[in-house]
Image 1: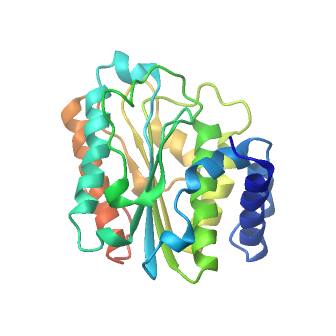
Image 2: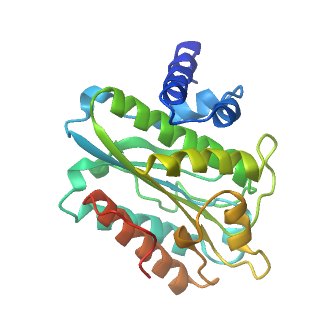
Length: 259
């Protein structure tokens, strides 16, 4: 469990981001909810002393672990897709500059920010999608973690770029704190900084308009992937994301998915 000191550290990082104009008052208020600090702390991972690079790329993924992933038969495809992204990054020249973080949609932290070689792959033991879809609540947590880690690195004089992928096969179901507009405010702050990419993948459930869901969350159309409900399409969407993550790690300015 995170203690009070940890919560205060996270609060201080977010307040500093606000003071520097990287986070609006609305976003700061959204992130200043009891328990969010502890959840963010759980993802921060490596200390600054363990970061040797002068430039870092934070690659963050939030795979959906709701029961509909399993009932649609997509468990293996999501698992493989996530692992493919890590492998693609591992094969790039900039792999030493990547810190990876994976947090499932229901809050389980598979890997707090860590060097790519230590990132945990998803497997049958650590991924069993059987929960709900608190999309807005957990997107706020994961983006808050990206912001806090970015702030921590920047304060140590390390240049930071971030690439985040939110994955879901349904609209929000189960959020108790946050609405789409709360997510949108945070995404807008991040995009204004021009060193953050926030992307989303909506795996078809046959009914949800994922473009509308993600637009309401402030994610630009050019960063939205909408694969059909088949293993091949899901894996292909992860491959598209991996290309963008690798190119971002190489310092390429990206305007959207090149698919």
